[in-house]
Image 1 (cartoon, rainbow, N blue to C red):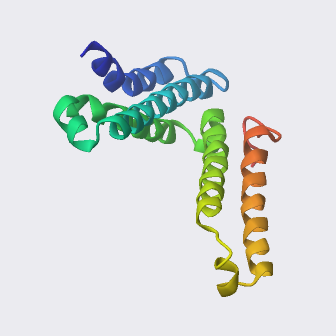
Image 2 (tube, rainbow, N blue to C red; image 1 turned 135 degrees about the horizontal axis):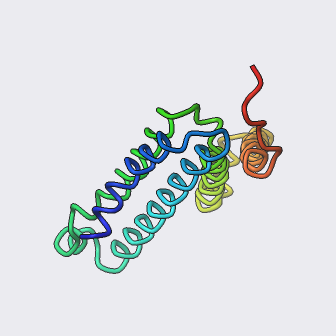
Image 3 (cartoon, one colour; image 1 turned 90 degrees about the vertical axis):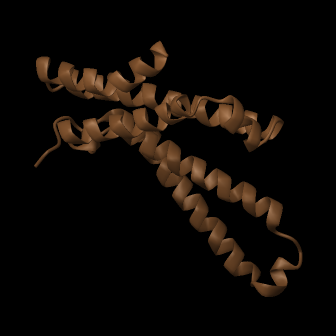
Length: 161
């Protein structure tokens, strides 16, 4: 229960700290740290749900898990994004930029894995192979964009007008 209270209070604690310690470097760092911790809690939450549903099914998760605790990580992540957006543009928060790139890379990976399980020889009788290659090229382009967001040149702080 203590962890749930800490996770509920964390975005608002960061809000107060940003008011007390405003600055060009400190505020983006605090907001990035908060968003990073929220993303970690969301990944752990998704991992728990994936494990629990694969081993026992949704019925066991609903019976055994505390629903209040299952709602805490999404609340923490969304409220952290909201607090960061209220304090400054999200483009100035380094963790949000990194999460955008990782999200794009993860989405492309999921689409590639879905395509690899679904594409059979019959698929090419309905779609020309060149169209399939264009779709793959587009997915690779989106993956490259995600890579550039994560590992590219960071934006200058503060952004130029």
